[in-house]
Structures are given as C-alpha cells and as structure tokens.
Amino acid sequence: MERIVKERDRLVSRSARLIGMTGAVVALLCLAMPGAVAPATLVLLVPLFGAFTALLYQLGRTRSLLWPPLAAGTGILLLLVIHLADVGALQAVTGVAASPTGLSTAAIIGIRILVGWAIASVGIVLTISLGRMIVLGLAFTATLVVLLVTLAGRATMPLTVAVLFGGWAIAVVIGLLLNAGVVRAARRISNIGRAHRAERQASETEAQRRQGARLLHDTVLATLTLLAHSGVGVSANALIHQAGDDARLLRQLRLGTTPTPKSSGQYALQPTSESALGNTLENVKQRFGRMGLGVSWHGTGQVLLPSDVLDAFLGSLAECLENVRRHAGVSEAHVTITDDDTTIRALVTDQGVGFDVSAIGEGRLGFKESVLARLREVGGNARVFSAPGSGTTVVLEVPRP
Picture (cartoon, rainbow, N blue to C red):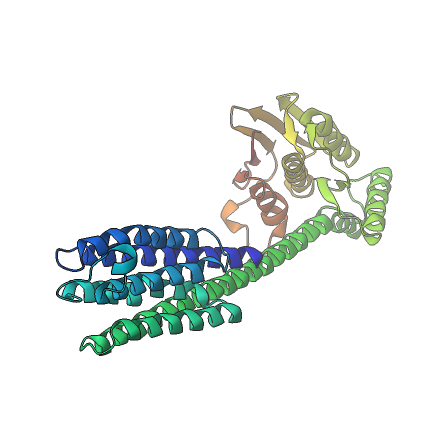
C-alpha cells in the first residue's frame, strides 16, 4: 500500500506542476503583450514569474508540504506587484511608474489566468489529507482577498472572481479524481491479486489431486488389481516386493511427506536435481522382469534429464509397460530411446493383440492421466499407434534440457 501512496502523490504532484507551469507561462505572455503593463513593471515581473515557475517545478518533485504555500505565496506576490505598479505605489521605492492607461484587457486576462489557473494548480496537491485541505483553504482565501483589493471598483472584478472560484474548484476536483482513481486502481489490483492467489491455490489443489490419483493408480491400485486376479503371471516374491513398496510409501504419506513420482510403483521422496536416464531404466527393467515381462532396451545409453522431466518420463514409460504386461498378451516388450537436439523419445513396442485407438474412452484414466497428462505437464507429449492383431507402439516425448 505504501508504494501505491507514493505513486499517487507522484501523479498528483506532477499533474499540478504541469498545469501550474503552463498557466504561469500563458499569464506571463499575456502580461508581456504591448501595452498590457508598463515596461518597467514587466522587468520586475519576469524574475518573479521565474521564481514562481521554479517553485511549481519543485512542487512536482517532492511530497513536502512546504512547496504549495510558497508557490501560492509567490503567485499572490505577483498580484500585489501588478496592483501596486498600477496605482503607482512602487514608484517611490523602485522607480516603476504606473501604467498611464491602467490595467489593460491583456493585463486583466493575465491576472485571470494567474489566479484561476497557475496559482489554483496548487490546489491539486492539497486534497490528499486534512492538513493539506487547511492549507488549501488558507491559500484560496489569501488569493481571493488580494484579488478583491487589486480589482476593487473595477467592472471586471465579478467575472475575474468567478474565474478564481471556477479555477480553484476545477483544481480541487482534479485532485480528488486523481486520488480516488488511484485508490480504485489499488483496490482493483488487490482484487486481481486475491483472484490470482485463489486461482493458483485451486490449480495447486487440482494438481495435487491429479498427482494423488496417479500415485494410487500406479501403486496401490496396481497391487490390488494383481491381488484381485490372484497374482496370475506374477511370482509370489515379486508381489510381496511390490506390496512392501506400497506399504512403505503409504506410511510415509501418513507421516506428511509429499511424494514425487519416480516410476510406476516406485517413488523418490527426495529427487535429485538431475539424474542420468541410464541409471533408472535398469530399475524399471528389473521391476517388470520380476513380474514376468521381459524388456529389451535399444538406442541411447546415457541421457541427462532434470528431475521433474525424468520423473514424468519414467512414470509414463512404466505405465506403458504395465499396460503391455496386463493387456497385450505377450511376455516381451521393446523400448527404444532416441534423442536429438530438442527432444528425447521412447518407443514402447509390443507384438500383442493390439486394440482400436479410437475406442479409448474418456474414463480410461490410465493412459490419459498417468501417461499423456504427466508428459504434458513437463512440455512433452504421447502418441499411440495400434490396431487389433497388429501390436501397439507408444511414442513418448519430452523436451531436451
């Protein structure tokens, strides 16, 4: 919030500086027109306008409350000098003679721009707090009093006073609108931040749910499926080994540890930042070998992958091999690892019964979640090629680091 306040004050101050300096320049140009004021008066007014402009410039640089009253005071001094020169009160002190024609139309216009534009611009920065509003009231009152003295008895006074009120009212409205606009923007930013945090939390919750579903599918449900089929095709030792791994995993989950999938049925709770693919493929081969599926490896030997990509790659590969073991009706599968400059691929091939790819339903979460979604989360993809009686080939792809 402090940063928003600083940005608000900077916007308000710079707006006041731009409006005030522009008004000061226009007022000086009006007073500099031939016949507007006496030449000697103009010589006296130019440095005062320079000081007035410098104070307005400083007003836009800092948030100090010192500069608004100084700028307003210098503007009021300009009004007094114009008035005193007009009545000849400065002649004895400075030698500045009164204008022989009094205040000209150009001079009246310059005064109106000065009081209703240049001096009024300080009101933009005096609407932020109660203390500044008090300074605003004092500055406005002083300007009004001096203007009434300057134009006392002149026919142009009512319109000039109206310009004064209108200019200060506009300045106050601008200040209030800028202040309210920044507050609304800050509120909207806060709402967007809360919505983003809620969406991120929902995404994280959904990711955890999906990870939990994969975890159960790849471990406990796989073991329960084997038990439901009385462990057909799997040795008793392999079944005991897998059940023991599941029990250890569930015990660690109960203690609050968040697992990271390493491969189907095997989870590393503290994955390394980078692992060699060749070091873990052998683990997958041994696991399926214990369950009666021979896996032949071909292609690339050692490929380094970041931990999250490696986990997704091996998890998807193991799930494909599990599908071969359970559904293909064969005892052997081939895995070919290839890589190029951008992609690492694994081709899982079997000569089994095959199936109609278009018949894979939305409810078949094994391939959809444990293979395809897992790879896409790390920027990869999976494709299936199969036909009844012609075996199956699954292409797994992950980006190369």
